[in-house]
Amino acid sequence: MKGVVFRGDKKLEILDFDDPVPGPGDAIVEMKASGMCGSDLHFYRNKPADVIRSLGFKDLASRGMSEDTPVIGGHEPCGQIIALGSAVDHRTFNVGDRVAVFHYEGCQHCDHCRTGWTQMCSHGADIHGVIKHGGHAHFMKVPVTSLVHLPEEVSYATGAAVSCGTGTAWGALLRLEISARDTLAVFGLGPVGLSAVQLAAAMGVEVIGVDIAADRVARAKAFGAAHVIDGSTLDPIEEIHKLTGGLGATCAMDCAGGDVPKQQAVRCTRAWGRIALVAVGGTLNVDGMKDVIGKQRTIIGSYTFSEVSMKDCLHFVADHGVDVDKLFTDRWKLDQAEDAYRLFDSQAGGKGVFLF
Image (cartoon, rainbow, N blue to C red; front, side, top):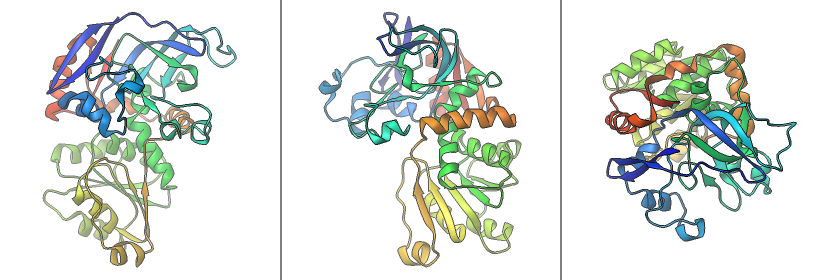
């Protein structure tokens, strides 16, 4: 089979790999869609081994890796089961099942793993597309514990989006305990931010979208934002207070990264406001008393989502007819990977996906 391997310095290769064979508890998934996530660009732009170390994997040898071990990229995989290991219970999964892949593997026994928070495994989680082969390939081997059934109403591309970006937005909304009583300000209207807008709007939430790119601001309206603010020309905090009768939003989410949007996400909320920090990057520079304690605000760190909530997100999308597919502005074949990542790196388009 073919697989995409990031080499850093904005280079990648499409290499030949042996077709995977399932172990006793594994499934082989034939890829139907593999999404491109912003975090893939870290491996495209930088030496993958250095990025892996920055994630906390200091001893590559203990993971069976060296400086140049080729690891297939992509951590938004979705496809169809074509083979199962001998120990798999067929009451849960069968050949032919449509599945999305939760892209973390853990020990399966610690409290985090047993409650679906595998990325927080007490013994360290392996990430597909980083430590283990990901979805930018024709086939992928994963433990069946990492699989979630894909509802018939949901496309493979949507399943890929929910496997990371859209699922990350869903996880943050759950952490905020959001409801239709809330007003939500979303800072950063890339794929995760637009997903947050789309899902929150489907829940009946009044959403305010904020970005400094005019095209993203305009696009947010089509995803359900009640109000949009171009932060390059207007002060988002002032505008949000105007829209909320001087009170501020009840909730905010930083999907942009950087110091400024994090600070704005906090300061745009009213007393008792709830803020979810989703984007990696930037420092939270706020006044402890004036911005947090005195306003009784709650600041939440939200790291992706649980496997259980991934399933819930897929069913919410199916039950409410949420058109997640429209997140994808670019659709590619695997042999177009160089062009796909060159465009993605320019950040001139939206979200891309490989379709098989």
